[in-house]
View 1 (tube, rainbow, N blue to C red):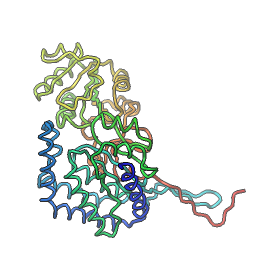
View 2: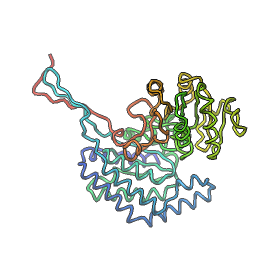
View 3: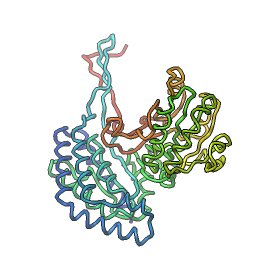
View 4: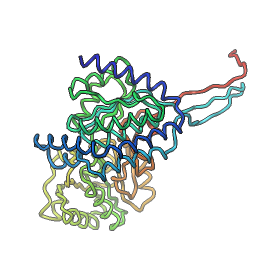
Length: 418
């Protein structure tokens, strides 16, 4: 039965997490280097397995963008291995003292980072996530249960074999990284129910339907974002060249990522100066523009925006543009239509910028920078396991530190409470 097999996975992960929690940094780093070496050594086997996955995906009529995310070549395998070595170079968060103080009675109290425990990662068909997620969990002292999409099953299986070999060579428990051994969708339901109390956290990475299901059904805490409806607000005090360059990058660098700007808001007080250059630049770059009446008046190629557009994550070279009455209306629009992911302001006015940064309730808020910087690597976290838009524990890029929690250590010398 799927239930019995999954619960056994959970029990093994819990035992491995207990052993891994106290592992030395040197041993974890050795495991990461071993993993990278094993992946390089098995590159041809991994490519052969990936060819199976890609061939099946093509027969099923998967779109080319999907095939591109799924496909591996020697360069991509090399990048996966290098990514593991980069994680080895990052500081180990486990055991770090977050703060400490002494009470008048002499008690010394410290808040110290500790692993979360067992983390379940449910993701779609990107084989690199298999290595990133397993490595990040392990370096932060957590056991990982990986459930990738069925389209990448053969590729991910071989990658997990290499990761487990690397753990074993370093003397760490191989069950610290396990892959769900079936493509049966019932396995996802078992993970969401917590595997008999053995999963402490679920991290979904994938499309809206996957994340929505996880958020609706999970009985354990979840780090996730449902959508990346990101905004760039161009204020009346924006530098025009900066506004056009940044917004163009925010939309068109990679339109299909969650940090891509989906809506641009332009201050009415600066629209005569700012709107037309922005619209022209986007259209010339091959972006479809959907706009309100003021935006449509700029160019006949602008498509009328509907109310639905303000709530749409296009994940494509499409942008909606709206003229708003200053920063107040921009903040209100973002509060109504945004997804608490990443929002930016372009302005040279310090007061307006600080108000926007303070009042926009998103995991990441930026000034004069592309929303496509919403990425753990760009934040200096190394690899990331995803972006979290909730308000509890972690927000924004989820890297090593965000995969830990904390405990209090209290040191006394015989004190008793009166």
